[in-house]
Image 1 (cartoon, rainbow, N blue to C red):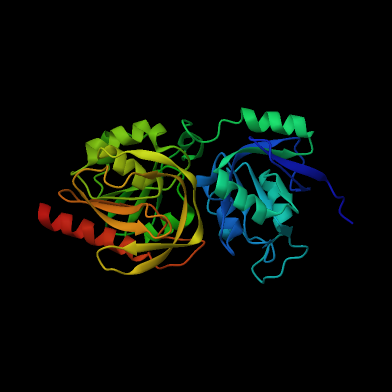
Image 2 (cartoon, rainbow, N blue to C red):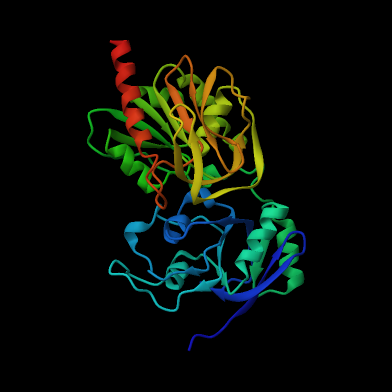
Length: 362
């Protein structure tokens, strides 16, 4: 019988949630606590580099029932600080399963805590905002001190921790897309590889290096944290605007907006889940989207663009396109993984934009 390891989660404001520790044994795990509403896809969420610096609270009460498989990891390693679940499945059942979630957490060195009232925690974060927290087997006093000393994600450069160290290439398409890795997911590269040869480059890559590759398009990926801390990418992007078609998602959307003169802000608790409704303002249609961001762009702050998408949960800006240069972006994840595939058409729109730019330039 597995030994029960008692522990607790303490938030920076002193709120306490008791539970049982899972995953590797660590005295204290600290990070910014956020909640995610996906019903499945826990492995993809845990391995999404956008969660660097954060502890993920899963709202769905039963996590781990279908195990894990190498094919579903979105990055070579996980960058989240920890996971919180209501009930960790005692057995896995799926023909694709290679291991159970607890063993996966141990192998990835991701601490976790189970048995919490995750819905109470979700309501607490929703009412009080995402905030630092710490969990583990240490005393309440030690956990409280760790939570209060945790800086969160504002004003922190997290992109440099998750970006690739080396350039790499995937796909064999006739077009060439340079993808800035700000914390890129594997499924995004796979979607891009269906329309082009993809050269993934580190976040610090200069505009001159990008242009030397003679790309047909530039892609700005998802990633963690505060877009204001991604200065080198923003500076490089300003040199690329108008010279090559650009498509950005999530953090890439925020960076494009900042390069165009927009303003970012930190949301109260962000959007994290696979069931968030977004309205396509041009078509009047509704897309159910996958999202993961704690920062957003102020509607109306980006000059000379058309705002193309809006989040129906809170009216926040979810997409835009430039009026006079070939560039567009969305705040959500069209590749999903996990989540619905309502928005995967955007990769085809990127291909169409590159074709139109080629035609206009020839």
